[in-house]
Image 1 (tube, rainbow, N blue to C red):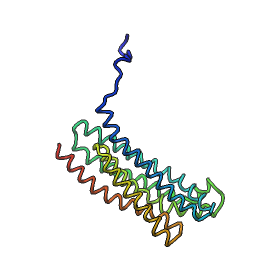
Image 2: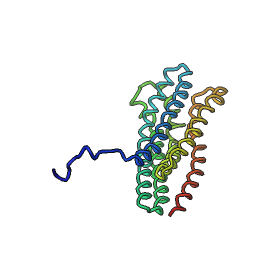
Image 3: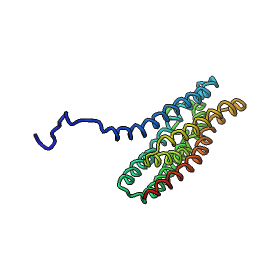
Image 4: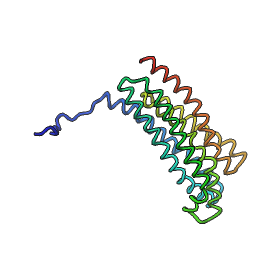
Length: 230
């Protein structure tokens, strides 16, 4: 009977709001699924060396890489939240500032932690294995993937900002085509001609650079469209 009374008869789904959630959430989920599938192809290429040392080194380095990504993604998630909140409050002049600060913080976070992960890589990898050969294989991934992970942060901020705008399908399609398309093409062409661990990992920074350029152009288009409503 108090102010916190729960009336089950009044519980219902807000259809327009639910559709907005689906419109933003489903493309993001599909993006994650496709990324997972492309990573299976990359993992298969790594397994093709038939070396337990390389597989172990890749796995250990990937675990270290996750620490870098988690620290970086905190800022990209904040970008979505602050962008959408200010758009909802009709304070569009803040959107550009939020984007710039999120980009700077994301790059600083990923670049600094990524560098430290690589610089002290032998020590961190040594926490997973005492095998020097495994550590050496892990250092290759730390060099090509973990240290330049800030490039991934750049495209993540573009995507996060646009999802804060309410755009999700476009960024998702561009990201899938850019990331998965570049990586799979690289694996099926260049890697087949030059089969080495370094060549496999090169597809990561290459895909981030190409996709960031495309997403950057799309972000400016969406941003200009948004500001016209101010």
